[in-house]
Image 1: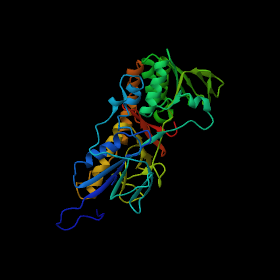
Image 2: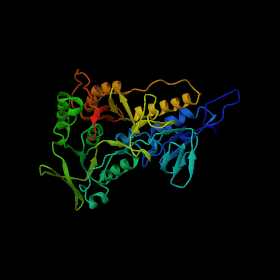
Image 3: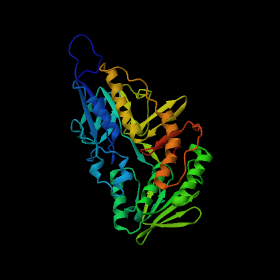
Image 4: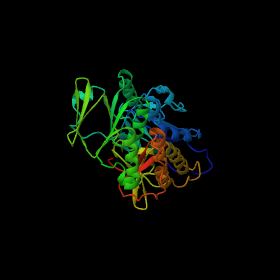
Length: 390
């Protein structure tokens, strides 16, 4: 299982690809999504390569776009969101650390896996509320959640199923928050969409577009914009959310939608900077794809936490691995940001039109310019440049 380049006329050695071995480390607490599965499918076409997928959850890889669209409201059961079974059974373990110099992955069980190429596809985790805002009783009630995983969807579904005409507070009016507000409203919930910004999305889209979006929200659900959440308490059997203006909103369920942050094990502990072929800028034979990868274009850094782009990046990273091993032609650069950003300006507004009957149509406006620390985050049908945190 050599790591060197191919040489001579002898049959090529079996290369280890981790997704860890090209190792696809599809490790993801509470999440196992499309990016890693796409890389495994691409590598599985080459029998001479040993591909190992490491997943630290028993959950089958799934389509995350269905979390808020269908599973949370009971339109689909969780197994309907599952992706096709991987070609080889994954290793069910947690990655404790990776050693890029030794090309070794250390697992929680004590096992060690060596690799010739490593693809990190660990995705992202939701940004949490600042410490101290949510009381212990509110946390333990099961009425405060993100909407990022199948577990989150089932938590939301449980509250909706046992509560007549449920009152739902959504804190964060980005794409996931706005989309979820429309979905839950259509499911019969009484929704309040709240955000600390007076005009959510103004930094990303400019005042004109963001103002139209804000008005669409006000026309279809209750809103509370321009005031930060300061306290979330459980009072008897309901949540009380207090804001900086002193207003208290009662709810049966609170969903926080404050964006995401990249998630990876040591030595990164967060985002992994990659080049246009998804190769790590810091470590040889390491690749990153999906929500954990940070890209740079013309001095602007960005990342995409978007299901379909993550899937495309997983396949692209695998093709880059194959090219490095001499098994395929170089796939060329991946640069989805400009087209996706442009697509977001029209798709996101029409999304509100379909979900919330806002009647708003996408204005003919140029794509806004982006500051160096923006991220590209979004729902399954739209993505948007938005500052982090939201």
